[in-house]
Image 1 (cartoon, one colour):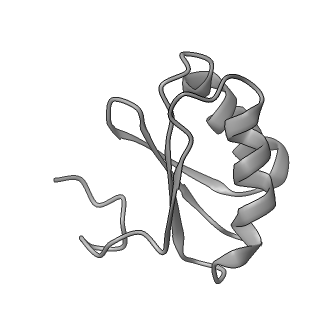
Image 2 (cartoon, one colour):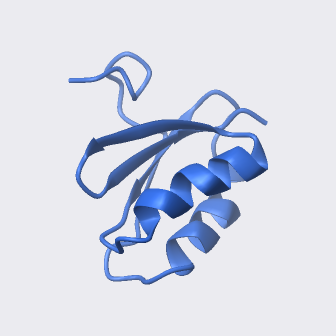
Length: 81
């Protein structure tokens, strides 16, 4: 297992966006990231192929850390601000 969730801990928040198309997963991420503390990880479950490029792009634009896609359709983001 990769170290995408703070050393194996569960993510602070999991957003199940499966079945939602672009831009809905990113809208959910943007709305909910402030629900977790700075330094915590949010996991986005998304089956829209656009999420593979949208999540890292959103992180770069908003200053959060994109931790990768440890499994297909699972995207990890660390809140940094």
